Length: 230
Ligand code: GLN
Image (spheres, protein in one colour):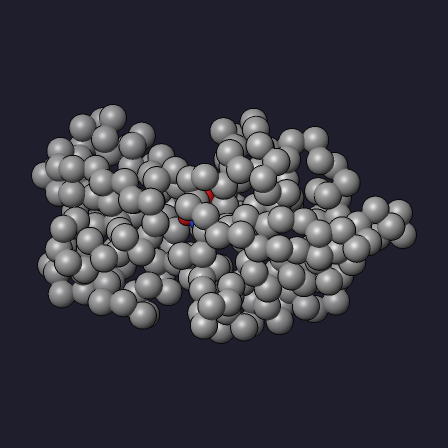
């Protein structure tokens, strides 16, 4: 009751990066996807309103910290670096990293080694993984290309301007179904997605965690999973 009283009628600004299907994407001018349904369902359940704002993934944390956003939901992995500046909800999804190449290429997982060009989205866990494990170690000797959005990375991959992209496994699977690309390897990172709020914003964090819990118990979370991952 106290939680609902705190939230009732308030509008929170939610930031996302809508090029990450099936979690967030734009279709017919509307924000769609697992995360979009999840945050709308939490808002309904807990009695608050939301306004969704789209920006590049790499700007989300800064926009949250500066107060331009109240909530970030963007398939965002809970990492120690991010935990240092924002607070995360309980995890709601797990993922690994996948390596994707053009559908008609002969590349295998060894595309990550030697003189190949590898792409990532700036500021993602895929970016960090490639930097730490392939670039710093000089295992990769080709170009390391960072893109503002996955759409740009995919376009370059399909046009043959980059040899492989490293990105979250559920999103790689969706792209492999809908674009001329294929998965040639999985990097098991076991990362967990959380919803972020400003550091110390306990009321809103409790509200979100309570919302997730209620949606688990009343079956609505299961319905959203079914809708996007059947
Ligand atoms: N899960 C990855 C991360 O948090 C990628 C998220 C994204 O690109 N939307 O860095």
